[in-house]
Length: 262
Ligand code: SF4
Image 1 (tube, rainbow, N blue to C red):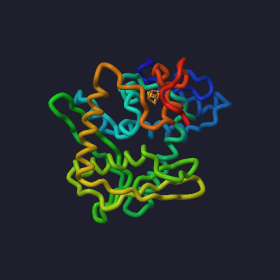
Image 2: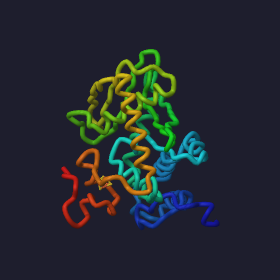
Image 3: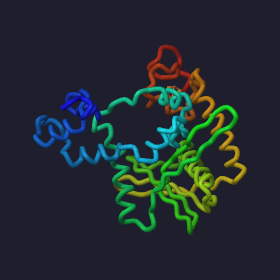
Image 4: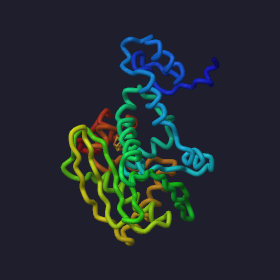
């Protein structure tokens, strides 16, 4: 088999060497690595959850930058690095938390009442910059006007983080840019293995959405600039979990980090 027929999909859970999906599935079927905890069913589901959808693939083919909502809620410098980096390969175990969320969303789509995931796209531009902004909205009911976002988590939070609040505000903005009315209510539901906890989030006003759009344009400008933005995270905890060690605020750097950490 030529190497291009089975390009590296992730790092082997046991050897941590790059491995293609087919080779990984064959290995799991024959249990060549007894220390590997995954079976072919879980590995195939992990791979399927990671595949880009057709809309995203099409957007990338236009040549314009494609910015996901998830990259616009946190540190701008981190998103700047991410736009310019090759995607790092991870082990299946590192994908696992994301698959848990995907399984939950699929189950809700099959069994829940009126739960429909939809990908929304807006093309945002001014005289200097242009980019597609896209996000997959968990649950929007056009009749009720409600927007619900689900988060699978290990620990239930005591409040909605700024990160999550900004995410649902961006979803509200995407809805209005796709000719849907502004939601009448926004709710974030946190789901652990044992409990569910939900928070209502204030619906942004049209003026707040205009301000958000102006801020997005500024963010796109900073993301597309050749020089990186300032090394200041949106929330202090971000540096602790950041993988971009070249950043002067990264805790692994010599000297005083700019961020507090938590
Ligand atoms: S280390 Fe902190 S400031 Fe630097 S890119 Fe990462 S999150 Fe942003």
